[in-house]
Image 1 (cartoon, one colour):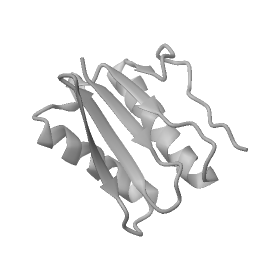
Image 2 (cartoon, rainbow, N blue to C red):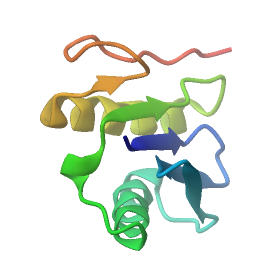
Image 3 (cartoon, rainbow, N blue to C red):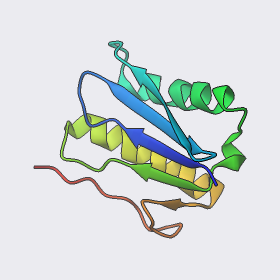
Amino acid sequence: MSTLLIDTRDSAKIKIGLKANKRTKYAISDSRLLKAQAVLPLIDKNLRSNNLKLKDINEIKVNTGPGSFTGLRVGISIANALGFFLKISVNGKKVGKLAVPEYK
């Protein structure tokens, strides 16, 4: 079972994790790229380093906040889109039920 972890709440860095084979590996970006430009390449990098493909992901967990409005929106949108495409749960919610941000 593989779980994709997405954390885009911090305005200064993006953290993408992959929990597989009882280990969790993180790819972190401190670059000033827009979050929308950095998240998908980080997911791809993490999958490749674990010799996995998108179809091997069984679940997605995304940090819903509190945090940066735009950062949360990007991470949650990507998680929901991947969950819908792969037909897997996001934050334990069934396909079609969206993860929603918590702004505080």
